[in-house]
Amino acid sequence: MTDEKKIEEQAPEQGEEKVEAVVLDENVLEQLLVGCIWDVLRRMHRVATKAITPDQATEEDDAIARHLARTLMGENPGFTSALPLVGPALVEELRKLPDYAEDELPEEIDSANPRAVMVYVCRTFLHGIYDMVRTLTKADEMTPEKLSETVNSTAALWTLRFTGRRADKLN
Image (cartoon, rainbow, N blue to C red):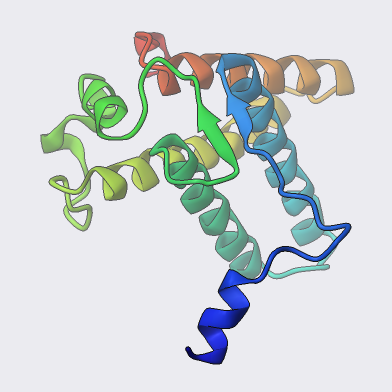
């Protein structure tokens, strides 16, 4: 028996607890999306104060998009999905929306790969946050109250989209 096999068979040390997966229902998903939005907003501030470069922010956004996509595909062990649709079934529902129809996806996206499509959709969600901020600042509506309201409504709309309910109005 190899050392690796012995290590795998050993019981967890005392004091170590097995972390239970979080049940991902619509409310948890909405809070997850709110957290993603605030994370992007913090990153925008860090870029503005030159704490990080725009390239670093882009890398962090991409990591969040991939993590969110894995979660929505049912591949994140930290979550047990209780959503109405997950994985390829959710991707098929998203493809019914005009922005994600097969002929609308960018050429570099493998439209036959549900995971690639989901990552693209999650990147679209994150890019929309930047558009949200531009809209608020252009209209001089960037108050803490308006920002909070917009963050919550954006998360609610994307929750509809990510649960397979027809949120066509997002387009």
